[in-house]
Image 1 (cartoon, rainbow, N blue to C red):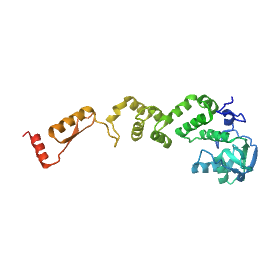
Image 2 (cartoon, rainbow, N blue to C red):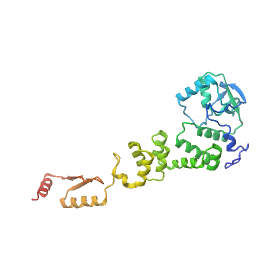
Image 3 (cartoon, helix red, strand yellow):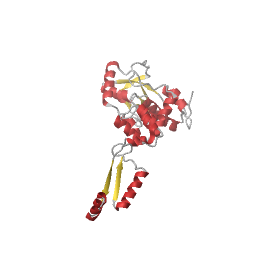
Image 4 (cartoon, rainbow, N blue to C red):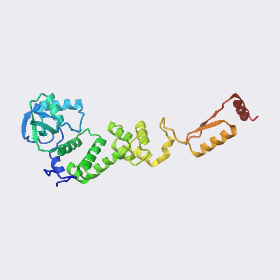
Length: 295
């Protein structure tokens, strides 16, 4: 099956063909691929448009230790550097290249491809999806990039990436959540299960904070969503709950009767509360005392 983005590619490669070149970095349970050649490590350079900018130091050191012991199992995918035919530019496998330098390898195995700039970016996004530590928002954003920039459908992505269509659809729905909730997913404060229960809810951010503060399960969050405004009975500290019309009416009547500002703090669901009366002079205080004493 060959997929056609919004404009055709000269080489006619589809998503499945690109995907066949991308394997999980450092996977020890996959059969090693035969490289096209071995090249000096200094003749290989990173892709300047690589979407992944950060590499966890601990994981990199762990990979370097494996490379030092077993070598690079999966070859790097490269192309000729556009500005220097004697150099190779990494399309996929920058972690392995960095690990090889730490392990002081002199040569590294490569698969040489003639990808154009568009295909290089596409492969980089596909490789990004294969990361074990990818958070749900980054994974969803990668799917969105493949669809918006290259014209792929959810069905095509599911087929080529070995994912279910529902998995891709559910993750992409997370991109509709408020930025605050998305950040909770990125940081790991919330799981995708928690977040899915909040999709389409106009109080998603409030409910997300409630779930984090009280360490609620996914089922608990689903119950909160179903209860709707009942959450007002357990307000989060610093989040004011609007007063009901009856309380406001009583405040107005007392203020008019006493000719002083009256505020009622009554927590919904509780029997007790607090009344605050503000006087502006000692004469008003005397009037208030006489009214309270019945004189």
